[in-house]
Amino acid sequence: MRDLKSNFTTVRKAFKYHFFAQNVVTSSALQKHYLAAYAAETDAEFLVLKDIIADGLNLFQSFFGFRSESFIAANYVWPQELESFLANKKIRFIQSQRGQIAPVLNLNKRKNLYHYFGQKNKYNQRFFLRNVLFEPYINQDYDWVDAALKEIGNAFLFNQPAIICSHRINYVSGMSVENRDKSLFKLRSLLKAALKKWPDVRFMSSDQLGRHCFPSSTV
Image (cartoon, rainbow, N blue to C red; front, side, top):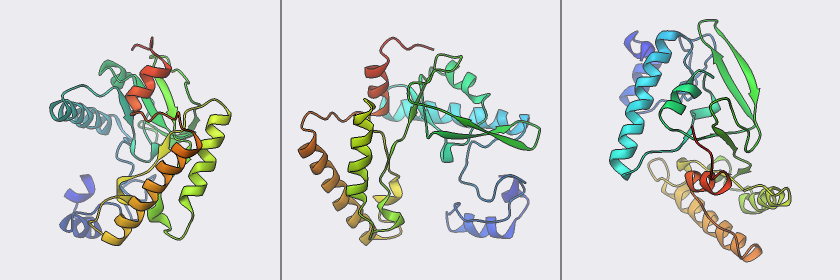
């Protein structure tokens, strides 16, 4: 919003076309784009971030009829201070990848943190790691089904749930109907192959997985 209000030409143009994911010069020394929506760098930005998340959680409840118990930050970037706020909002499960980028408020720097499945922070929240990549939009010629099946097998080998990373850009038609159709076909192929290889496999949402793996987890 700061760059939009400051009339950055590229940002204004992107806003006009309802687009925000371009690589541009931003007012931040740490960010080259706007995808990391929770990358607050100052106390002032952090206060705004908390208000935005509170609104989002309320919207989620009004739309779905129940409170969200899990959270994932865009691009796996969030300040550690956010976890206390999320705990107060009854968020029990934090989704991530192995590496987290954590902005250090007011110091204009970041630090790298590392997580594992089931890891517990001081607020008793549990971390979930996405360990299967399924993103056909990146390259429709790549065998995503075979690659994902191998990663699912690796997860099961180590007695871990297979948590699939797959974004909505794969399945919407706003930019390409052909891309959507190809991705949906590959998704159906993946699900059929997984059921054939592991007939007793169970499909769960993130909150269901959390309650299944950590039934006594509270915040």
